[in-house]
Image (cartoon, rainbow, N blue to C red; front, side, top):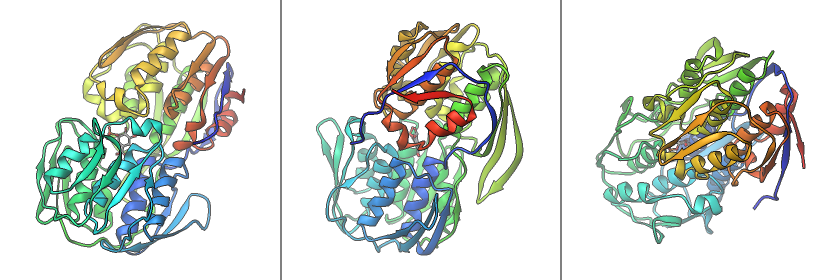
Length: 436
Ligand code: S3P
């Protein structure tokens, strides 16, 4: 467990210059997993050296995969092939990472050995029934604690078979866990989603040479092929860029360039929403790299106004709601968020964490079961608790930048799970954050 870290974020700005936020968390997890299962040696550049993805790399180390780090954000993975993993020997600690635990559970369900998956207090309170049920329908056996919570015990030596899944919840983690089990299953595994979610697993499986058919909201693959090593270039994480997009939109005089940001359409819903709110963000130098779209994002100060957030965009911005709550608190008029009940089962209950924190800073906010109504205006000084949630902590660091007084941020250590270096990078761009 990391040591407690408290910050204070003070009004400052404008934000200027160019920066590159760390690598994409979702892509980094998947790159390590598929490279480990491939035949041959893969190189991963732009790897996120955050606690979540380091935990995933350590998990494969425990299972006998050699992973070298010759330089910052680079990993060389010596793949052991689809059936080359060895039993971990002790429980695999996924830390704070829902993606790590859920995807690993799918992958481990197809192994010839048993595994145990544990996590921190936040992860231990996150629902796993959503992967256990579909994996069980494929023949897997996974035991959880009462109510479907971690730790998990994943039984090996199971005969998995393909299945047609139609998950109730829009979740790329659920879809990906099913697909990874599908690699080991006999026959065809297919997922039909009610709302399309991020398709990194599909794209990356294809890049590693696995035959996979997919379109938005649908994927189909057959089991028992092989993965061939390939090099992966991880784009900067749109979710980490999001804090700067909102901050620079709202601090007068700001003009900031964010380099090489991943622009997968299933991730960039916040961009559409900020533009609807009046943001001035342009895409420069858009290009494809390794099957993923990326671009430099140029953001300039432009006052925002409140909107009704289109429900069709919720899945495409599921990780960006904490920072959208802050944008809405500073926007002119009212913002209504609906259809976002999934926020209640993230690293914290993000509707409750944001509503509690913004109310403590004097914002008029009405929490609802699946969203909130936020009346924009001024953010005042005060103290908030991040609830151990990295995105809540960074969102309130932005609130402090925009507020008319200092904001104390309790419990920020978990920022390191997804955005190591946030403190320095933000201060370099024009924030004024100190440790308390
Ligand atoms: C992720 C999917 C999302 C997201 C998480 C990362 C992934 O979760 O919130 O941060 O890498 O697949 P859900 O798919 O469960 O919504």
